[in-house]
Structures are given as C-alpha cells and as structure tokens.
Image (cartoon, rainbow, N blue to C red; front, top):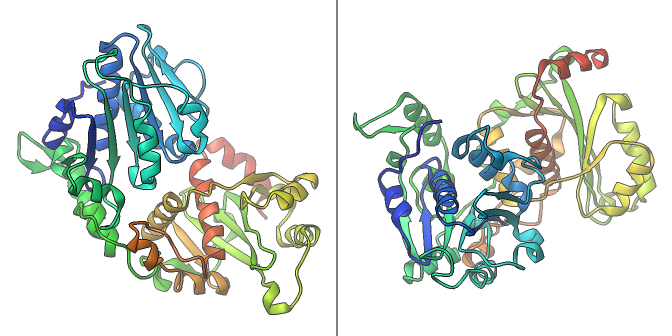
Length: 424
C-alpha cells in the first residue's frame, strides 16, 4: 500500500489539535480518508488510546467509512481485520492496547457507556445538536492518554440553515473547508493539473442539478428546493419491459399501509447493474372504502409475485412488524428495509441520474409520485433536509429496494449461472 500524504486543506486538518473541528466540502475531496488515517496513526502512536468512528445509523458505515478504512487505510493482511466482518464489527483492536470503536447513534447506549480520546462523526449533517452535545460528554479529559482530545465532524454541506453551519459561523467550530484539489487521485499537485480520473469525476459532478450541484460540486451550504428527484426524466428513466433473458435477479419491496396506501414493487436487476421496477401493486383504502388485513395483503403479495423461488428477497417497511411476521410464517424470504431516509434518497438519486434505475411505463402511480415528491420547506427553515410526508409511498418503496440491491451486491458469475433455471 502507498503511504498516505495529506494535501492542501487536509494538511491543516491532519495537523489540527483543536477540540471541536468541522471538515466540510464537496464530494470526493478526501475528507473521510484523512480522518481515518489520522485516527489510525493516533491509535498506533498512543498506547491505550480510544477512538470512536460514528454515523447516525451504524449499518450505513459498512459500505462507506469501514470500506475505506479496510481497503485504503490498513493493509489487507493487518491483524486489525481479524474477527467479525465489516457489517458486524464493533471495534478494531491494536496490539498496543489502543482501540477504534465503531458505532451508530441508533445504538447509543453502547457507544455512550465509554470515553474516547477522539471522536470522528461522518456524514455529520445526518445528526442533530443533541447528538453532537451528547457525544462531547464522551471525550476524555485533555492529556489523559493523548496530548489533545478532539471531536471532528466530516460532511458535505447541507442546508444553509443547518445547525452545523450556524455553529461554524458563530465560531464554535474550527472550520476547515476542503476542496477537490486536496485529493491527489483527482488533482496532481506536482503538475498542477487534473488527473484523468479527476476530469471524469468533475464532469460527473457537473451534471448534477439544483442544491446537489451547489453542495457536491462547489461545496456550498444550500437549501434543497422543489421535487426530491429532480434528475428523474420520463425520457431517460421510463422504458418498456426488459426482455426476460436480460434479467438475473428479482426482489420485491413493500411500503405497508392501512389507512395510507399499501404498495408493492417487483424489481429486476441485470448482470450489468441496471435496476428496473417491472410492475407495481397499489391499494388505497381511502379510495376504495375498505381496509385490508395483513393476511389479505399477504395473499395479494403471493398473487403479485412471479414463481416463488424466483424471488431473492421481499424487503418490507421496518415499521410493519405484524405484516413482516405474516410473510415470514408463509416461508417467504422477508427482510426489514434500511430506512435511512436521506442516505437512501442520495443513493437512489445517484442510480436515477446514471440511468441505472428504470421504471416500466405501466407503473403509473410510481411515475406520478416522482413528479410530485417534494422537499419540506418548513423543515428547511429549521435547517433540516426532509421530504414531505405526502406522495411518498412508492418513493419509500423504491428507496427500500434500491438500498437492498446496493447493500447486497452480486459478486460472481456463479450466482447468475445458478439463476439461469429461473429464466423462462
């Protein structure tokens, strides 16, 4: 592995020993890598030190923060990687007694029962002031083991009224704004020019629109406006059905409702990673004047799906405990959905923008919601990015499906060969 060298603003972040620090900037500047390298170096240098790496939701770290740490920061042969895999790992233990603890604010009792020399909060815009203040109480007293103690926030910018920006503007955080030229993979410091990867990446960011362009390309704190999926296009994302011989896996996702609409979606994925909503089910009790029971919905689900052994997973709204149990009793492969809203919106938006997320033209309810699902302006006035809780049922369902397909990637050709028997 090549040794790490921070550049530009990240060199300041590396050297900074202030107690409360904000490292913000557009996507891809190397912020997360810098903090992970700094945490690893500190643990190796100061025997018995403790660091906490944290996000709002623990499982969101598996394919983001921990992927970077295990692939870029430590050697593949490192004994730090012994034990649990990324999804279940709770800590990395060093030979000198130091430890990096991994946690989420969704399991706050575990991480709040200890003290740490450094705490690094990733995707910090997901958190609120209460989260941050609670974490500050977990910092060891200065000089306990390390000569300084630090809590640092790592994020792309959020809305212009976000509490993090207010804290930084008030001088309560040492702000270090990173830029794309800080990342040597994108910008060659010696040649003072973009690398080939940098040219491609900047072009990709340049195709974003609205607040995403301002935040992720230019690093501006800007409020979200209008529809949530403003990159969705009938011309690019709505298609006729993909031929069956192009499909390698199927899942179903469900957004459960009693008084609210209940919707199912059947999704396919090709070996190339293109995901398509093939068909939809929709029941709105307020329109038809009758609510359905869990058993009736489960009957509808079984009629909705193609042959049972063709379905890899049925991904269900995690709040629908009784419906999940009804499906489980029928021997179907049910999974609780990842309901991290903002991260899910970001990931689905990326799939839509790159045309890896398609909708069959017959799915009229879903197509309509993509044009009406909007941001909550009152929440933005409080500094929060939140979508409106209207016209969101198919949107929640699609978000569940996208998160499952991205979090459970198909890794080898053997999987597809085993599925050949299912293809008509």
